[in-house]
Length: 357
Image 1 (cartoon, rainbow, N blue to C red):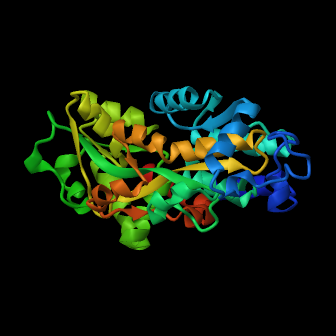
Image 2 (cartoon, rainbow, N blue to C red):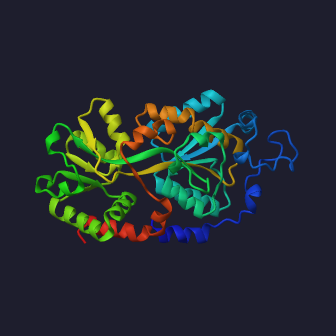
C-alpha cells in the first residue's frame, strides 16, 4: 500500500474521537461500577492493583479479539500460554500486514469495532496512529524495553526486533567466499546466485538513505542489472529457497527465520552487512477496543511472559536483556514515520529498480 493510499484512507476512514477518555470507555458495569465510574482509561491506569484489576475486568469481558500478521507457528504458543494463565479465550484474525491494516481501517469506516488488540510491523502500526485508530498505553513493563520500542506517542510498542541479514546456503557458499560489504556483491561471481524479497521497500528505503540516495540507487541498479538478482514474494519463501539451494544467498531477510531453520539442522547461516537494518514488530490497542481490560492484560503479558516465549523461538526481543546481543549487530532502526512520508515514491523506486528501470 502506498503513502497516497494511506492518506486517502485517512480521509475516508478518519474517526472523530472525542478525547482520550471518551475513546477508552469501559462498558458500563464491566467492573461493577456505575457508567460514570466506568469511564476509565484502563490502558493508562498505573495503580498498585493494576494487574488484579485487569484480571478481574478481563474475566468479566471473557474474550479477546486479536488481529495479527504474526505467523501461526510463531504466535500459537503465545496465545495458548495467555489462555492457560488467565482463562481468557482469544479469537484470532490473521493475515498479511497490508491486508490487516486495510481491514482495521475498513471496519472503523463502517463504525464496526471488532479488534481488541493489533500486532503488525511498526510502519503499519504508525499508519494506524495517523488514522487516529490507536490509543496510548502506559504500563510498568515499558521500563524494561529498549528506547527504539517506545515511540513518544506510546500508541504502539515494539515487541520483537526484525534484523535484516543475508542468509546463505552453507553447502553452496563457502565461508571464504562470503561478502564483507554490499559492494562485494557486485562481483560477477554472484551472478544468478542472489535472491531478493520483492516487497521489502522499507528495508530498501532505509538502506539507500544510509548509503546516500544517489549512490544507493546507483548501487542497486548495477547489482540487479549485472548479477541478475531473482525476485521472490515473502521472507519465509525466500528463506526456504536458500535452505533448498534454489537461491544460494538471500538479501535483506529476517534473521530469526534463518536461526529457526539452522536450529532445525538446515544448511543455512547468514552474514550481516553494514549497515544492518532493523525495525520492530508493533503491538497496539485500538481506541475503541470492545474488551479493553483483556486487551491491556494481553499487552502486559506479551511484553513479559510473551517475550520469553519469543526468545525461545529464536527471535530478538525489545527487552533490555537482549540489548547486548542486539548491539553486536549495530543496527540502524527504520524511522516508521519517515517511511510513511515518502512511501509511494519508494514503492515505485523499488519496483523500478527491481525491474531494471
